[in-house]
Image (tube, rainbow, N blue to C red; front, side, top):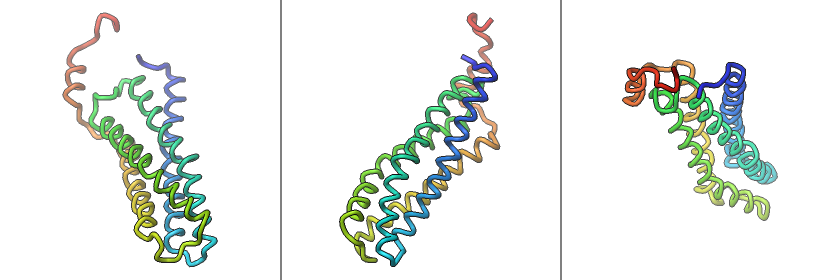
Length: 175
């Protein structure tokens, strides 16, 4: 099903806004994670981990899920298709990886926020656990930049399914 131009633009706007928004939210989360790891001020550390939990649950998760859903709507409702071009498949896979890693990290983020709410961290307390959000946020930021580049450059290359669909011609329903 191909969307009308107005609906396509609306869906594209929602997709770009949620994708770029998730990129910005992860950048903000990274700043909080670095502050929580490196600050000498106990109040700053506590505030950083509490803010990280709120940011993850109420900003990043909704934006990443919205990006995934709106990307699926865009691919199904436009001639690009979901499995016709390698760059679209790559964006889908990257979005799925980001979503899964994020959901797996939520438990650790919640644990760090709970500990921060109840106690004061010293520089060495839970260092191994506290560095994980920094590494994951930095990696997530880099991974989220790849779909941006793919969307702008749209590298050529049809998948085998895309080649088959291109040579198939219009079906009876499309005539």
